[in-house]
Length: 234
Ligand code: C5P
Image (cartoon, rainbow, N blue to C red; front, side, top):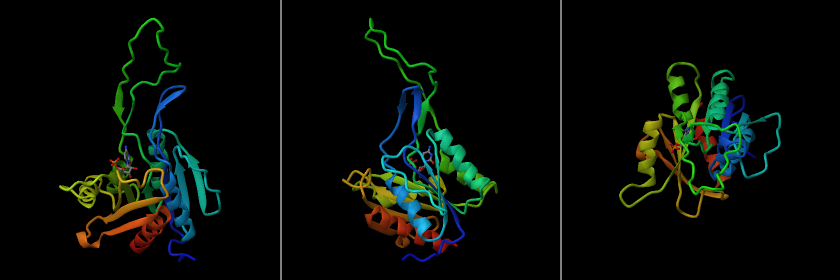
């Protein structure tokens, strides 16, 4: 059994991949399965937290809603931004864990009708994209403006090289995002995306390089380690 060390804490977890609509039948999406975010939501509820799981598109069945676990559903990055801001500011979340894979760009225009091909022509349309807001950075900024007080956890997927380790890349990203903890997943190996196992480093802002912890195990193992890290903050 798990310690109930997060009792009374409101924890928001985002999971899955956003979809950016092109027309009524098409979208730009990504391969995020939602497994890691679900594991985090369940681990948080196990430790006594009141969990709000905000799901984008996932490839695994939804967990059952319980008294400790509420689920909302979004599709695009802008919808996820709105839901996450509301959870942090209006619902006064104590923690926001941004596991979701958020599209960095969206089509500039949404066609109200299905985009058609011209059967006579060989040309193809060009899709103009615009930047989506960075939700995590937006939450960091709003926290510095005093609009909420949530402890902010980000995720990153990095591939290391002989010149730059995954942990080094992660420390740079932690600085640029400004969140409190960054979980850096090592991708490119046969791990992480869509899998049950993961390889990750937990980085904490302001900590010495020796204090970072590595997790190789299941996504549930990583979720438990993250909960211990979060509980130690309170
Ligand atoms: O910039 P990058 O995608 O590597 O950062 C990953 C982290 O930032 C994740 O926690 C993800 O949920 C978050 N993110 C975000 N808004 C975006 C892109 C990423 O909140 N537009």
